Image (tube, rainbow, N blue to C red; front, side):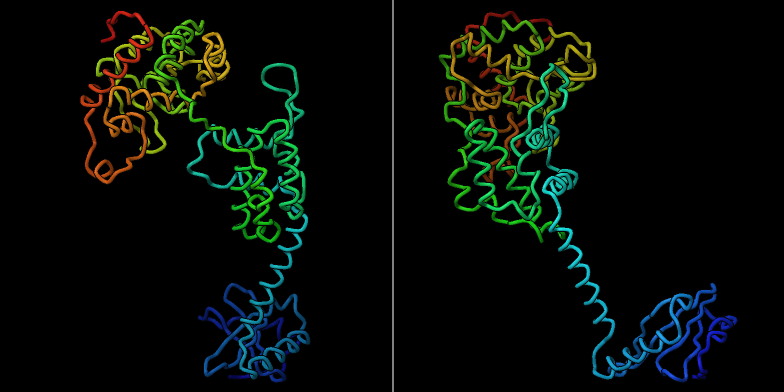
Length: 425
């Protein structure tokens, strides 16, 4: 290859040869240095040498940025490295990785836990529902904001004080002290928030930046586990047979017909409360006696629409797209159902039963009639537990209806509910 003594004027005048995509002007003083010109007019200094019998090349930079002297020094270092049997490209890559790691380390040292939390919430969580996401937001809210209803400003969520700290400072000792303080005033919220925080910490431990700051055991260390409040899931969080009469009497007496129907439907279908809440009129087939439920397991599933429940739903006004429409907005469904239910339980002089407890009640009460477990699971939308259920038994709607109507009739009898079949049948 032809070589010249590279000078500023020669570098400035050099152009790509006609008909080629790129051409090279090699230096006489540093044999592995050249100016590369491309047909689009770009020019840069490059270094090229043989390593283990093969040509390797790196680009130093544009000729407008590098001086000839600096390019020659870099080319000489490149040649020395190659002569030692080392690939300069690997050396450069390792240097970049080290620099990036050092930069990430500095960022990690300063990052506030709430910044990582916000990134965590914005990350893809395909299995999260609206309610689950809202629970995370409430647990972490900083407080001091004007609520949608009422005049009292919002209170900080249980996680607010933890998320205000640098992520690096959140140790197991810090989490333990936080948990002890929060459990004294709101143990259930503290326990739920701790479980959310554990999942967040696991996410941080796999994040390219936050893993350098987070203490992966800060929420799982022994001193934290010993203070963790137990889950507020009671074995008796379900209605008993002898409680049905008092429960139906008070729930049917609720002035808001949508709330009353919503609660009765939870018990009579065993549906998940959030999925039942968003039931639309298009999901109700009075003629075919079917309901379409949005389900987290199957996506959509069809269950029977039993006679009494059909009469309750048919009596509701059709002013919104939702069956259990909100009185304040045509585009919203009912919210704040727990308080009316708690009041009905107090008026009935019954122990507390959660909304999820009504779903649990459906399964528990079905045992009085010895209904097939698979039938109850299919109506409720549980995952099949046995091989035969999972791969072979998918009961038709008519068979489900036979068992479901039998259970509804029994519940109404125990609940002393007097009603007359409506034209909805």
